[in-house]
Image 1 (tube, rainbow, N blue to C red):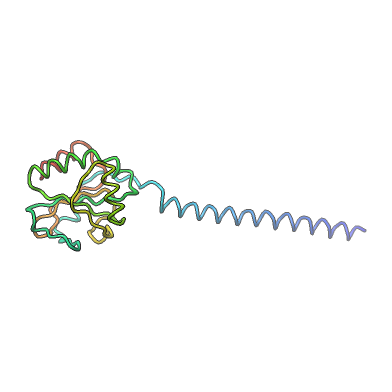
Image 2: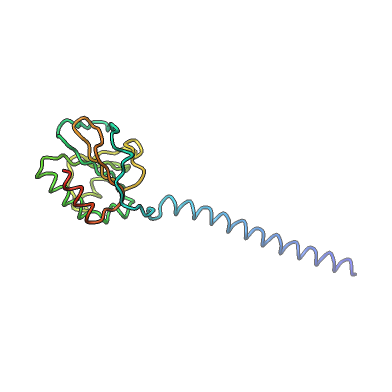
Length: 176
């Protein structure tokens, strides 16, 4: 009889242990999937607004864009999934107005399809004639928002990364 009780206790212990191990494996899987989802779809990492000297002097190509249509072009590298980009909407409107007044072309590059990008910009109240879809890395952009000043040959003369404080917003506008 004692061996039967010992077998029952072992069997019961084994069943409970197996249940807890299964629960732990499922929790680990959920944590992994949750981490991946957060990284992919969660809020953007905070980017300190900075001048991005690493882009200066690089010639960029965006299919269908003629840089020589204007002495300077300001490129807004944005993403519809970037809350810093959304927060900068009022600045982009002021920038667009100032650029238009000075004959500077403004364009936007987003990784999302053009129709989605245009809808996003419309919701921000920013009416940009040239909106292109391109992988942001193809124009040297590693974080959004990034503003890029390009000359008539497609060479980057200045760039800024992140949501800009008022003093850097003024600097961008003064360089138009």
